[in-house]
Length: 438
Image (cartoon, rainbow, N blue to C red; front, side, top):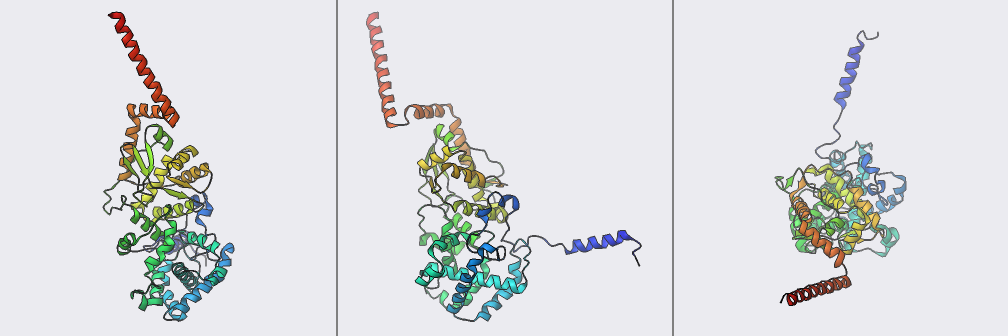
């Protein structure tokens, strides 16, 4: 018999639909799909080129060539472990499966069995790849995983969509080498120290040197790690001498001023130099009229690294958006290729892309969709002082004189000589007038 009240039928269906609705994000969520509007600005920056890690890109046709290498390294890792028991590793991942599933921002369509297989193989591959990077590669590795693939893999492992939860790596690594991890056996170092080898590729500072003095406080104070992208960002912040996060938020403010481009600031009398006191790209400093900016190496991978760190920060650490602040500052400084050329000349940008306009396009593109609900007070102070210095009439005139008359050694000599002759002419004129008067 047909329902006598169709309105009630619709209400029942809607009620069922509403009750079945699930939140997109959970408390465990830390691995995010990049939003379509952001992804279309540079698809390649968020997509792995060589290897898929985790469920988001599993099965992508152009990444299938690496599946056999992943399985071989997974087998090697398990065989080199203390337990040598595949069942123990499978059981470990099975117990973690519900928690793992909650770490991803999208509903994973894989079955429980399929997800366990993907996570186990990818995690063991990551651990074996990290161990080989630590211990050294063998001739057989050169055949299985040629050197020209290893650097692209390092960068694939930093992409926000290409992650497995760090707690899975920790569980499997401890299961494999529990008795040797804390015995001083250098073959199996602590997992954080091991994985920092991978992360160090994302710190795009020329000739960075990672010392024990740098690592020790980081390893003891880093706290909970979500995945490699998170580890990379946390290590970047640790390198900073100036921009340590504030749990109280007192070091951040809602509004911030815009600054002129690098060429405009230079014309206004601001002197640019490399900040050699810091190995962190975030440490901008201003002293009198000297703006110190850490060097950054711009390669084919720089944009992908910055975009993925930034997207993770925008999704997961909005209250500590220090990288977003840095991108905004660089976006202000760089408008055209002339700004890039100035920063290259001062040693602040190390350009491996070749074309200065491409560097300008990169930084301007990254800064387009950055959200800054608040801003770092250190940068705000610098911005205000830069603007005040450039707006002062005397500084403008001095900068104009430097630009027009003292921008080369010969012009400087000619200007000094001209001024000297002018002074002599004035003195001679004065003496001539005095002689006539007397």
